[in-house]
Length: 125
Image 1: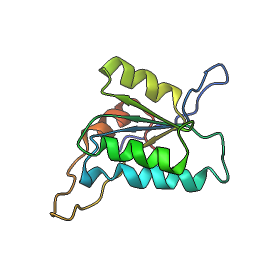
Image 2: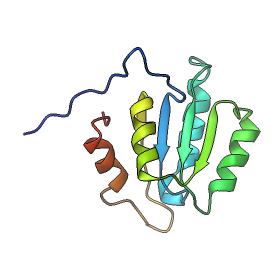
Image 3: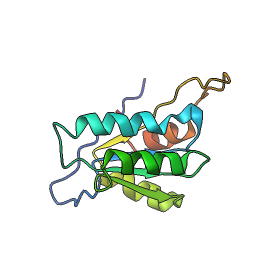
Image 4: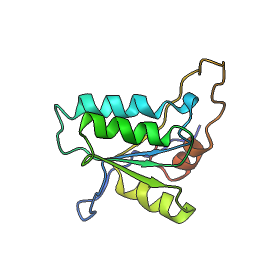
């Protein structure tokens, strides 16, 4: 069985965002849950930053939630990015976040391609 080395940023890295999320903004991806979790975590880690990458039907709702919670300085929405930008952000982030739920219509995630990509980049933990 192969092991995946733990990702530890080197001291010389400039980390622009501690947390990195990639995915479509849809019901089953539940990006709003990540925003709510970050809001709670900011009480203990007020300088935490989250980069949210992707597009989708719920993107504007997520942006509005961030504004409502007044955490605009902690959340960055970048839209769709290139594969090279994906690799760069992974290398500069402390943690990669990916989660999903079963949507009300029963839609759920299968094998997440972005998790597989993160594993290949050796940052999934």
